[in-house]
Image (cartoon, rainbow, N blue to C red; front, side, top):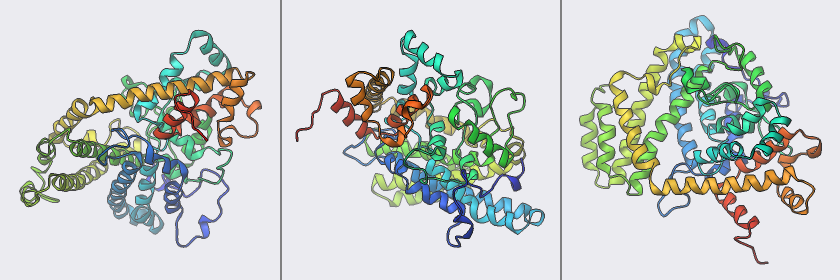
Length: 464
């Protein structure tokens, strides 16, 4: 891959002709605007990040998390873009330098905004709930699906993945939202962390970062192939018989922004909820500044922390300086691995290739987060609720889809919004109809899913 061919303002569809003449907003800025004004992005406001919503204390939801990741992503894009522009401007020219100096930050920020847009209700347990529903079906029902779909299409449901769903939301022309998106191929490629099909992914033992999960459903495979061809993204060497591609280098910046944010934000939320003390957080993050001579040294940070009396303010300051520190470290890691990135050979995230002295510190954060946060009773409770609500909703709608002739089924199918069904519902393949159901349910907010579940099961009946 070449830096000069890894970006293009070509859109995912050919319907947009305004961008070329808009002097105020470039195509990449328009990507950001389209995502942030979309209904799918707004729905993240009521989707769980880690802790249940709503609660007595403010904690992050998917929307606030995505906004903060976008902010960090913009910083990473700016820092890396300036370095690439300065290094290659004399060879590649002014237009090249202009993109990397001014536009890369918008690309990464937009990709960060969209990175969780495909996540279902109830956090990552929502993904598990969808997978579990399809894998747990009785053999007779499964045979209906496997007989009516390709192996990869069936894997889209048994290995349902929020990252693949995000790519679908950003590129699929849903019946009533044909003009809602038209994202540049550059931004789209920067979202796809796992550029492979469902049937080829979910293979952590392969040692290939792009195969850990999946990045596009069968229905969007052609869209991804067109993007890969346009930007010069090639298949993973040695796996040419599979639909497994190397990562676009920009993906590493999107991923790093997310990796930075959730590590510190989950700790901050746990502190606000009284699950962790400030001292426990301080022990985790201050050692990152022991050898810092450029951004903030530890002595200066500790003096500032002593001036602050409110533990919440201390935590906010610690979070801010740590993010700045990590942006600098990840920028250096990206540039240090430039050749591997362009060759498609870097099989680790930027966080994982930081200098060795930081790896035990990151592992300590991860271990504490797992033991004290992700296994906390309130988190486990919402995960169980997700399995119950999503599993039962899927069963109600899938059974109606398989038995459309009954009076109950006809009523149930009426609840699916027209944007998911389209005009040719009866002519659609089994795969497309099951996708319509999963599109509907995965797009729900936590609150809407619970409300609908209560209503259609008779737990709550609204009086008029």
